Length: 453
Ligand SMILES: NC(=O)c1ccc[n+]([C@@H]2O[C@H](COP(=O)([O-])OP(=O)(O)OC[C@H]3O[C@@H](n4cnc5c(N)ncnc54)[C@H](O)[C@@H]3O)[C@@H](O)[C@H]2O)c1
View 1 (tube, rainbow, N blue to C red):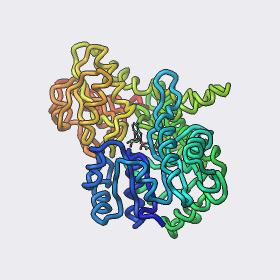
View 2 (view 1 turned 30 degrees about the horizontal axis):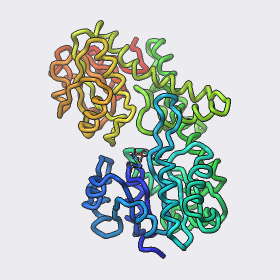
View 3 (view 1 turned 30 degrees about the vertical axis):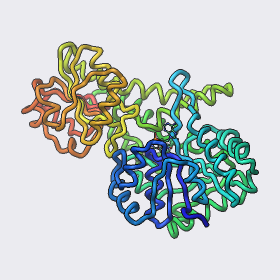
View 4 (view 1 turned 180 degrees about the vertical axis):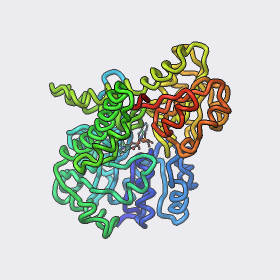
């Protein structure tokens, strides 16, 4: 047995959360990143990004000596028995296909390191990758560069990750299933044993381990995200139909269908649409993958199209209340793609802000956690907005407030708050967090999915 049981290549969002959770269960973990500053922070017990509960847990596992971070992938691999690859798999901006450069590099580096190792080593791909990647790209790099054989000296599995940002630690400790795509039986068995120790009694009826071939596991992840994103786009389309009929509230409709056990309530809240690091890139990647094989994935493409329109629908609602945007000041409440994270990747607030600016408005933004990442994201977009430090400041002297992310501190705001602070009290409730009747009696108000009679 090596000094560390597990090594993790990539200490981004999923990599670091996974490392911390393994270490918390007493499994000695070594992670590697090329970013020296991040490695330093991690070794001091400080996460380089915000995630609920991560800071406390990271500090604990570093102090206990169960987690270290190094900048050499070779060192991490050679000091461990199992390596998890959790590098980013972004999409190419031109054709929106998956960019596997980091994945290939990880395969190369791990392969080179394994050339120096005698014992059996298991490599698990945990990043989201299109079918065929783990075997044909990572497996190929591993064997060519190590000079070893898959299924004999090196094991290979693909285990999709299903955690959600904002609740990723909880999701990692209490998953509802573990999917293992295996190159051969020994590879799958080795990973299964590790999880049986990690999860103990949690494995069983509440969390079965299901095993399959590698490509099926790769597709499970895309099918999973496509389904969830489509569910949201579906209810958003229904919300647009609801708005055509005054008095119909999409919340009631959603409840009405969510009580059907075949549908359930989750991912049935309409709003300004989905974003984040996964849904946009994964749906686009699987559409591009299918197209490269001659198939148009029409339903998934429609889920993307509906979502693209939905953020801009907030602007249409604001226009109904304001008339023109020209010369107006707009307040954005919540900038991250959802509460509980500072992740700005494909956040709807970005499209909303950019459209508002293009229509001649000034935009102010406030997010309880995402100020820094938002400054970076809006900078990349070239969208000029003013960032402030409180919800009072953001609405002050503005003409319309648009709720883009439903952070707790926004939920308790009353109509008086907007009336007392805004130049023109006017709210577009993009996350359906306020009582539509109460608000619309006192100020100009539109909510997604409910046109009042
Ligand atoms: N974020 C999520 O909620 C989530 C959930 C499930 C699955 N996933 C999948 O997990 C994988 C990792 O996602 P993430 O959110 O942790 O990504 P991330 O962008 O937060 O982290 C990616 C990490 O990859 C590493 N990396 C390696 N080589 C790199 C390079 N040359 N340039 C930049 N970074 C490099 C870095 O450590 C970086 O931090 C992706 O495939 C993603 O689709 C993400």
